[in-house]
Image (cartoon, rainbow, N blue to C red; front, side):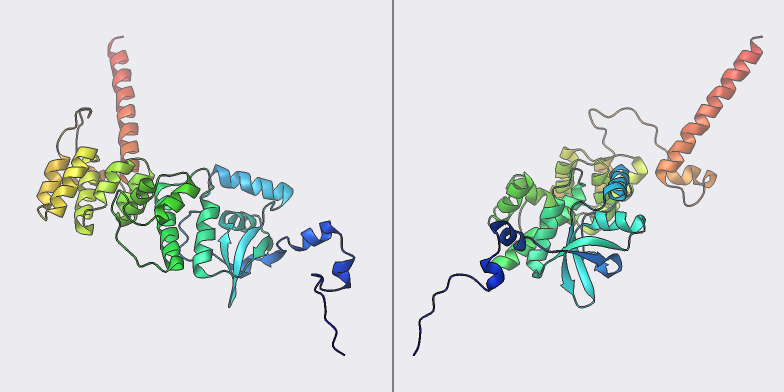
Length: 310
C-alpha cells in the first residue's frame, strides 16, 4: 500500500532536535584558514596596496587581535582568487603569517567584479584613478550580466542606468560616475598628476578626449614649463582636437598663456642645468636641491656681509 508523505521541512534527526540558534548558525558563511601562498590577487585589481600609515595601523591591529574581518575569495584551478582583503593579505604576509581567515564563494566573473568593487569602495581614501577603473570594471560587469551591448558614453550620461546604480552605492551622481570613467582614457603620467592633485577632475575629463599623442605632447609641455591647464585651456584643447586642428605647436602656445591667477615665474629648461644633477634625478629632487643650494648661497652672502661690516 502506498502512503502519502508529508514534507515537514526537516532533513534528519539533527534538524528535528536543533535549536533555532543552531539553525541560524548553520546559515552563516563558513570561514576557512587559507594559506596565503594559495591566494592570488584579483585580476586587474584597480585598488593599490600602499605602505602608508593606514597599513601600519592595520599591521598593528592584526598583530594584537588577529584578522577581525575575513577576506573573500573564489576557488580557482590552482588555489583561490582574492576578491576582497588585499590589504589584509599584504599585512599578514608582512607579519610573517602563513594563513588568514577567508570566506570562499563560487562566483561568476561578473559577480566577482561587482563584489570586489563594492567591498573596496567603502575605503575612506581612494585615488581618482582607483575610482575610475573600479567604476569602469563594475559598469562593464553589470552590462555583461544584464546582457546589454557595450555603448560609448558621454561625459554627461545618456546611457542606461548602470551609472545610476553604481553612483547610488558609491554616493556619486550618475554623471560623476561617467566623469570618473573618462579618466581611464588618460595616459598614465597625466593620470598620475590627477592622483597627485595637480590637475582637477573637470579639466582632466576634458583632456581625456585628446589622442594619446596629443596627451604625450601636453605632458612634455607641462613638465617643461611646470604648468597645468586651466579648465578653459583644457576645453580649448579638447575642441581643437575634436576638430582635428590641434598641433604640437598649438598645445605649446595654449599652455604658454599666463593665467589670471598665475604668479610670476622664472622658467629654466631642464637641459640648461641637468649636468649638475645625477641622471636619474626627478624634477622634484632637482627643485629640492636648487632650493637647498640657494639657501646655502644666501647664508654665505650673509656671513660675508657680516664679516665685511666688522
